[in-house]
Length: 428
Ligand code: RAT
Ligand code: ZN
Image 1 (cartoon, rainbow, N blue to C red):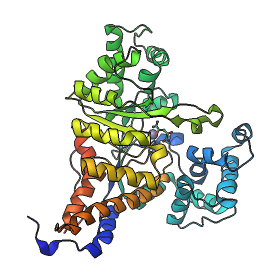
Image 2: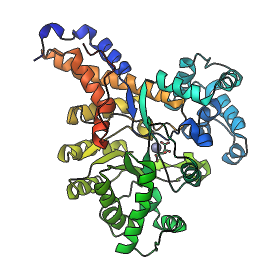
Image 3: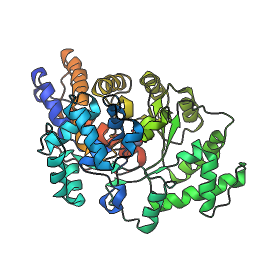
Image 4: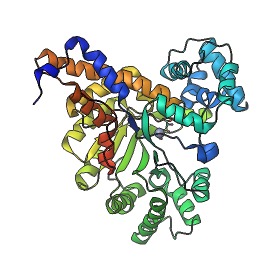
């Protein structure tokens, strides 16, 4: 029973919510980061930060440099071009550009320099180990989930060389080729000594399961993951449906690992932009509902890329308690859309969601992605609580702490079977 004398006053609400949100550590459930021991796979520093593919796409809108000319440059040459076009000759208004400004300011650097000299000197003075600790501390992140792709030769070599990974860098087994390009997956899996064939059969499914079992033993992943096109349909008569039914779902069941689906990509609509050339489309969320209905014992983590799919995802989650919506993905990770989606989720699902993930590819991005996410989430939470207070509800600070801790780490920990985190917050 809440005592009225511990209730948060309306005038204090925004400040209290911001304080709780900034002090609550985050478990970042989807990133593309690696710990320092992974060498070249671990991306950090100003040249990587400015070369983020979100910024590369924006660069071509503000420069007459062609993609061919751009890709012919060295990484630092590319960063110089982007800095000049997006930060010197233009104001950094977009979310990806504003993010770089946030990172520089939080590190004590000047975001208005005419070139990258100052920033390069700063990063040259640090080790990646020191910097990793610093970033996780500034961003107040307890844990991150990596994206571990056994079909990527560099990643495969890293795991075969050393599987030493700090516990706070959790693994996620990404299996896009298996579900999106069976021909390529078959070639890679058979090259590892498994007896697969292009023509699927129960024996081939068993071999693919053995391949996944091997990688599960090596990575101990918190979930299996795939990015699916917006045309994804389940069931259909492609190898994907059969592989979901005969390989992925039984593997998730046996190992008690959730299945994460990221749905809505339209790959390479402009291949000249390389990684920056993907777009999105509206997906059929009836497919998600059918999977959840058929497999009540399997937990699904789902994020969708189209803004127009967000409401249907919330409604699906109301019907299926084995469905956990997560994050505002990629083109949705902009403050106005994060606020809109978070409000929609709170209204339809309360605190039973994972409001955001960073998708950081470069370590430094954790600083801005989480500073901006915390700002957007605080606004939406404060608005929801203020309506309760206006109606006479005595809201306690510890309730705010409990809700935020749940959304920032508790829901995910529970979903993937990790023990609850010890609270660092004084919730009184
Ligand atoms: O957000 C991104 O950086 C995308 O390029 C993708 O990596 C996406 O997040 C994915 O995991 O496929
Ligand atoms: Zn991603």
